[in-house]
Amino acid sequence: MYKSIFNISKMDCPSEENLIRMSLEGISSIISLKFNIDKRELIIIYEGEISKIQNRIHSLNLGESIIKTIEIEKDVLFEADNFNNESNKAKQRLALKLVLIINFAFFLIEITIGLFSNSMGLVADGLDMLADAFVYGMSLLVVGLSVISKKRVALFSGYIQIFLAIFGFIEVLRRFVFSDFVPDYKLMIIISILALIANVLSLFILKRLDSQEAHIKASVIFSSNDIIINMGVILAGVLVFVYNNLIPDLIIGGITFALVFYGAIRILKLGK
Image (cartoon, rainbow, N blue to C red; front, side, top):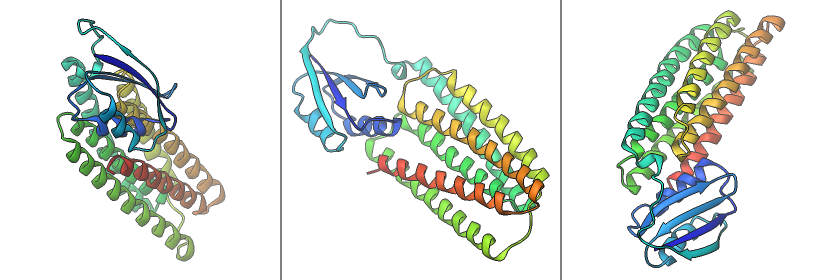
């Protein structure tokens, strides 16, 4: 049995960690994987040769190099990974289900109110909530799926988000050129405050897991980004009131659609 420490120079977010996990899945000789994104390190405990493992990692073009390899005794006890603990799996599933429900519910609310109030900021934030619901749904599906199935889920989710982002950009441009209807700033601010509360609750639920797993860390990142977007929509509502103009609403809508598009590109990397 051996322990190899890799430096992965391009591993700077949970997306790369998830890529590596999916790439190495199915190699029976691997005993455990431990990631340290801050140090860009991956520790692998395995039996037999390293060549197959190294080839899989090398195929991802993440700039890997082996720092050192040591031989260890088979009877050495290793600390169990949180994700392999059934109790923690159940907690993760429950937390992800809760945030999925919260995000999908606010997707429906923000889309409906956004169309009613003529606010692209609310519509964009609603679509972002839907994109996050896809991410949380993907995280729930991670356990027990084959590598091919995981990649298909990632590709489906990514393409849906790209479609929504492009549709949103087109609508923002259309309103910029042809519309002068000022959105209802009161509804913008009220609904965005409620969405902000929902995202803070989602972040609290995910943070309580205290998990280092890629899918949980990615979910925390998405919830944190949502809080920033909510504050942006609130600010846009205030500016709409002050200037009696739809431009602030279109700006925050365009920025949010850009974030949805960027998130989709990251997710598509998991499906390659």
